Every structure is written in C-alpha cells, then in structure tokens.
Length: 202
Image 1 (tube, rainbow, N blue to C red):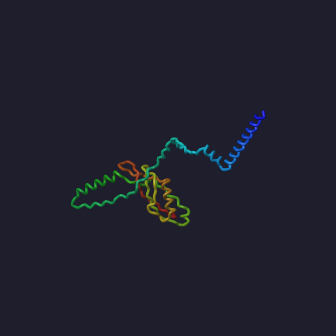
Image 2 (cartoon, rainbow, N blue to C red):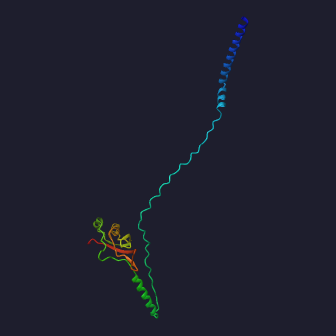
Image 3 (spheres, helix red, strand yellow):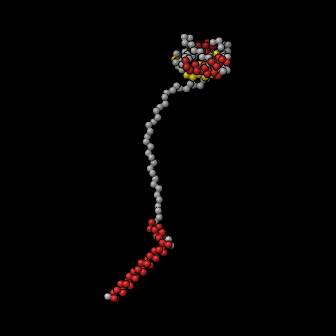
C-alpha cells in the first residue's frame, strides 16, 4: 500500500507540473502575439467579389401623340419681275402675238383685292398715340389664304410709330378678309400689300 501511494503521489506531482508548464507556455504565447497569428492563419485571406447587377429593363413607352396640324408657313415674298420687251417696229405680227399672250396671262391669273361689300375694318387708334398726336401711314405685307383671310402680316413700310404699326398688324390678323387671288379661276394663297393711314381727324 505504501509503494502504491508513493507512485500515485509522484504521478500527481508530475501531472500538476505538466499543467503548470502548459499554462506558462500559453501565457508566454499570448504575450508574444502567437495567438493572433494562429487565429489569422485559421481564418485565412478574405476575398471580396463584385457582383454585377443586371441592367434595369426599360419598359417600352408609348410613342408621343402627333403634333396638331398647323397652317403651313407662307412662302417667301418674291416681287414680280419687271420684263421689258424691245421689239423692232417692222414686225407687227410679233407684236400682235405678244399682245394676245399677255391678255391671256392677265385673264388667267388675278391678284387679291379688297371686297367692296366687306372692306377691312380700320384699326383702333392707340390712345397714347392719339394723345401724342402721332399720325402716319403704314404699309403691310399680308399673306392671304385661299379663303381671303390673313395668315401672316408684316410691316413693309413703317408709319414711323411702333404703336401705330402694331395696331394695324393686330387688326389685320384679327378681322381682315379680302377677295383672294385666283389662278385659272381657282382661289390661291398669295402675298398682298395694303396701306393703313392714321389721322387725328379720323
């Protein structure tokens, strides 16, 4: 019994010594940073990946509504060319032919004119212009539709006073109507000059 007690006692001392040595070794490892290196080795490298997100699909939008139909812009005003024909006096037959052709050309195309039964209304005299005594004549260049109404009005020759010019343009676009130009008996759109005179006596 005594021999067994001695062996068990020495075994316990060795076990305690081993445990103490193990604790000392762990404390020394932690103090020297070996524990952090072991944790880093266990964790391994961290890999980050970028995941491409699919592009957002756009829903087909309905097409925009068509723009409203508007009057076509008037063609640029081109003054009629002045044609001078010099013919020798000894060729009367040629003169006769030219005269017949000119008569047909005039009869087939007629320019616009004022309707005597419905003449254009005179524009209102601007009150400030009347107080200032402004007077003058403004010549308007009008683009008439095929029905004789005014599609566009421009100042071709100013009266010298902007208020009088604007009053004439405003009235032309608002109320004026003429007998339209015709070509071979068919009403057509055309340019037309018309003068408006502002007098204090009116």
